[in-house]
Amino acid sequence: MMKIAVASDNGEVTEHFGHCEAFLLFDVKNGEIVARESVANPGHRPGYLPNFLADRGVNVIISGGMGGGAVDIFNGRNIEVIIGARGDAEEAVKAYMKGTLKSTGSICHEHRHFDECKE
Figure (cartoon, rainbow, N blue to C red):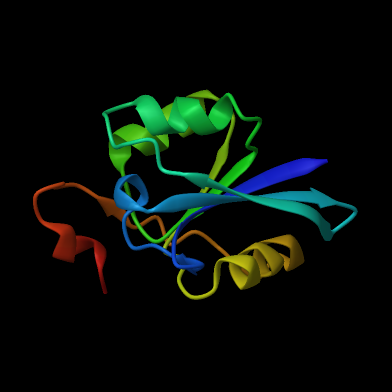
């Protein structure tokens, strides 16, 4: 079983990981989504969210953009980071499972400038 988290706003992949309204957690078994859960974002604090998700058993995180510190923590916890995703959260998970969703490596460097995370 694999657990995939998507940083989302209203069921869409969010532009900025730390400021999403919720994390949609998808349990995947044999290439199929077998369970889904929405967990409210407990609040953006440096270093907190990657460990919060890791402690929930997440194997993959999908987001639009993410800061380098969060990416480093996820990598340290052996969680695959996919950034640069957009659109419907569940479709992003399905694309990931098919191997068609690839990370763009678009890391946000300035938390003060949200627009830099957008295309």
